[in-house]
Image (cartoon, rainbow, N blue to C red; front, side, top):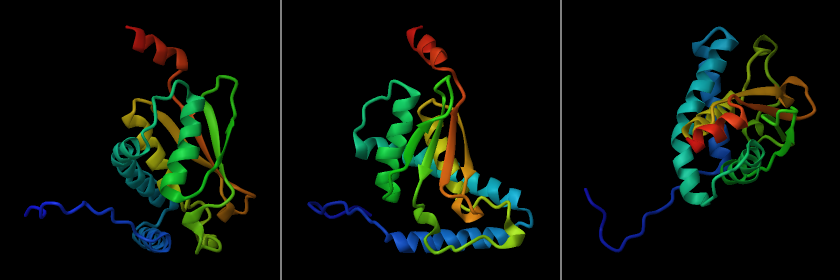
Length: 181
């Protein structure tokens, strides 16, 4: 079925609260389906990866960003543009290695946990927001930047902040060398 001529395509947005509640229900269902937290974490990461693979196209089209020239620029772009665009927050970025390939995104406020007070004691190793790690990893891989993305700190586990670690797996020199061939 085609659209009537002259009708604009509508951007359908859901409220942040609805998204957060739906995400909470998803995590709760996964906890019922899987006994081990590691299995839930893996499932959330896999789901996030699939989202990231598709979300990068939307991000590049809507943000009109230029190509990043360093891992530092890439980490800043993730924090200042992508997180702001999709989650409404801007994490702080810090570099944690001399090789300049390891970065931390530090979230003072994580919107995915707005309605979560704490994790149950029997779910101590659950990474509630592991979906975010998968999203970042999937999006980076689609722009040929393989990375390892993990939670380093989590407020739900009693830490002062939520911190996501990003380690780019290729050295910057490897990227330059491949581009010049």
